Image (tube, rainbow, N blue to C red; front, top):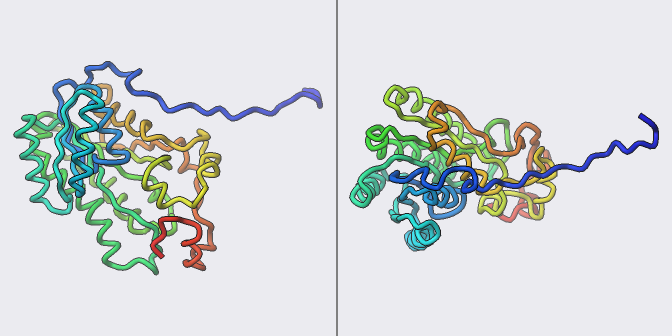
Length: 300
């Protein structure tokens, strides 16, 4: 190699794939999806993808008006039917009622997404027992309640569960003790479900998204104006898209994944392997009030 030879290389950024260009159009014809958190964000996008391949869906959430609009939009966008079922995953009876409503409408449930979640930035010192418990109740207990309400139907139809988790509990991420504990529990729940129900033909997996752009979570939890810096630190050189998570869900629900169960599918562009604290460390631990000037969604 000569001294004047240019050895520099530009980063390659691979775009998010469109599942519709990969899987056949009738992939989920005759199937029914039951999705908590399906009225917005990542779970809305997953529901849209599953419906676009022929499945009908029931979406759950606490905000009835937003849920009704989402169901109408999903049906119009996909040509499949979507049922809105207002429910709080913390209440088992509301979930059971939503299951009954879904069965009355569609006659079955094949796929379940446990996607309802809550999160905010708070250190262990600043958070309180009520706040910590709220996240556990929605993320972990809510996922358990969802399984209990739908398990009979999913077992009957040899269906599949997907839990929406995260990667933040793979290391000690400041300001996220509540969400980390909840998501670690969700991962464990999915693994046990896979082992217990596998002999009956039921699969259970976790999707762990990394930083996903254009989501409420990133808007509230990431430092202001940090999008480019976050993307630069991800090996795949971009923030994730909601369609990346939807494509993973399509695969896991498809027959291509009949031997995939009890696992965590991390969809983050390898971010967690190189990720350090997203917030200035140890500055925000030593001076918690500084967080309010860094992150829009800070509750301090």
